[in-house]
Length: 310
Image 1 (cartoon, rainbow, N blue to C red):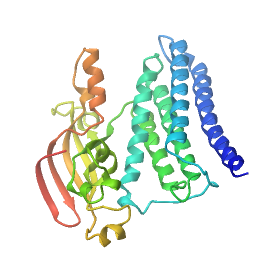
Image 2 (image 1 turned 180 degrees about the horizontal axis):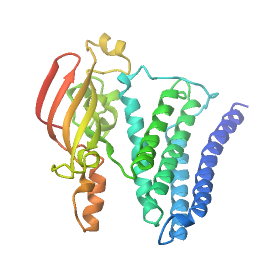
Image 3 (image 1 turned 90 degrees about the horizontal axis):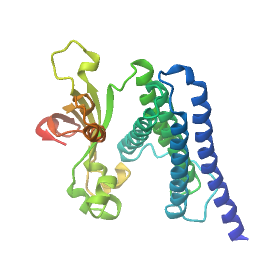
């Protein structure tokens, strides 16, 4: 009887991500037909459908694999567990950043089919939202280990919304969410939580992560004499968090605090080049904040400067 119950719950979870795969495929294919008059020359809808088919297949396989490898039975009833009070909200910024990057990368693929930038932005935003939503639903069936987090879902929506809003307002990206990381000694305190090696720490140790909003200057001030690639970047990080909750860190002798940064950055997309390989490299590099002189403000030490900070 117990096995039948678990099997039924697994079937429900699988049906959820199959539904989202079908919805993604249907919406994009349907929208592409309506957009035929928007672009010159006509978009390559055959290529667009092949891309969508490939993405749907990869997406379905990844979600199914995740449901088998990461989530373990027994699956519970769908439960809500809001964790917005954990990690000083840096993990929510991480959700936002991940959703945004999914939008950015999938939209770049869609652009190759000849559709307009705004259409590609819409399909990219849709992809970012639909890719992460089933993961949150799977979390909901794993209470009390996880549970569906409304704040995670909000962050997953805000990421695609920012990407889409920029193309709706300006027809381009002017604000780039970016990421940087450096290893910290705090990972040694709780390696099972913060990572045992570098490959785990850059994902798990929030103390070493910084998330940035990199604002391109020339896009807002086209008459400036400054280099077109120069950006100003605002960053957010945390330190002394050796537990998800402040109270846990304090019980281990640490006093967590927030860090805010002001720095310079490079918008690699605005470096002129005709080489396709370099354009691809610059597109990938635009995920990362470059090391640069940085001004920091934190709740413990006040203002401090860094000659180079990453």
